[in-house]
Length: 312
Length: 250
Image 1 (cartoon, chains in turn purple, green):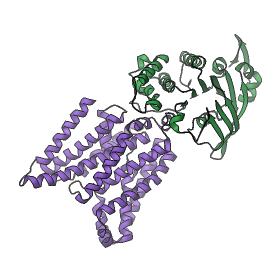
Image 2 (cartoon, rainbow over the protein chains, first blue to last red; image 1 turned 135 degrees about the vertical axis):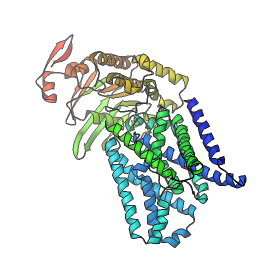
Image 3 (cartoon, each protein chain N blue to C red; image 1 turned 180 degrees about the vertical axis):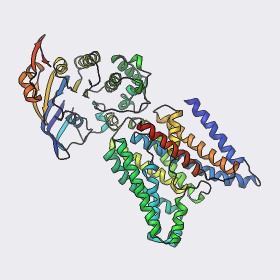
Image 4 (tube, each protein chain N blue to C red; image 1 turned 90 degrees about the horizontal axis):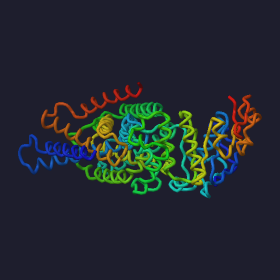
């Protein structure tokens, strides 16, 4: 286990190095600063998506549902759409991106706690029902966002659309500090919860019998999940299947229940997938296909495979 | 002592428990019996705060259920619910190790490891300790779960139909072990049983529930009679006495 973690760290190190130097021309100071910023953003997004998915799967006791499939990021887009609709584009663009992000994060936390807390409480024990409710809910939220996009005027639509597609290549540098801060705080909180998460993974009844308060832990985990999803969606837009891909790769590589191992492992795997993939596409293949398309394709396929395996 | 005071409970408008009051003293095995849907599991899960109490009051050793901190109660009372599905990645030793969580909160001390080994030995799980849960038979898995609750080292142990899936040897082994626990360590075991014969053979006290009410309560010899089977279970099975113990002829 430890050996594999070290190996993964080495691979991630190589990916990061490759991403920074491969195909670099001209002033090194500029290249490293420019790429370093993107690298940092990719790492943040990777950790945010990986950890939010992992703890969400621990809470719900399944390996197929992810916050993205349940529509967490769609909720974020809906909030954004509502803001644009209510304020109008000029006022929307006048808001500093940091303030916008904080407001949106707060909105998402409220929405997620209310909506998904309710769904989880009602269907917590029945995975199939949870899955169905989640998927239907995410379709509902996405449709609402789509409806909103149709009623707003074309200029507003263009702004919203710009935010609605995942893009790993141009990250807003203004948001990096704030996103980094939120991710760090959530990361520390999750790492401190690692033993509690092991117990929560036993299911609600056994966890409660071992003294892990049910509703309180659920709220804490959901809050952390929505914060991390908000961070990653604000930085690069919605990515539906990355979390699924990353956590299930981790489960394959690390057959353990211990979050002290799983947490660093998913972070590393996510970093490798994102930075390695982006480096490959950007610097080796000349950015012909956006990484998000590749990830969605591979991730979507593995989602289908997992679903079919579970039904059998 | 577990004190249950005027507890009523309904699910979706259907009354499950109607005004149940019961006192369970320290030490011994108390068997909860009754037909399907009598409210046995509900009563157990209310005592163990797995479901919120609707009306009435339950205290365990003076801790008021619903007010006491969950981690405090976890060192006083352990419950093994009826339906358990747990991630298959766990090994038996990992699972039993979780029983010590209320004490070490994730950082096991050498003393905790000793307790885990003792629990594995007590339930004859030494050979299976490294196996993953999903490679075990239903009975072996059940034993692993009971061993986990045992490792929790609480004065009160609530078990919801632990004999499900167990063959006769495993059932007797488990009941013997529980009786030793109750007699030697002075622990209190509250156990939901379907088989009256096991209840009569191993329990010190039988409490029968029907339609959410306590309808019989006492020592097995006094409780288990032809009339008891007729009124509680609506069956005309008869009771014979073998070696001074009541036995239901099925």
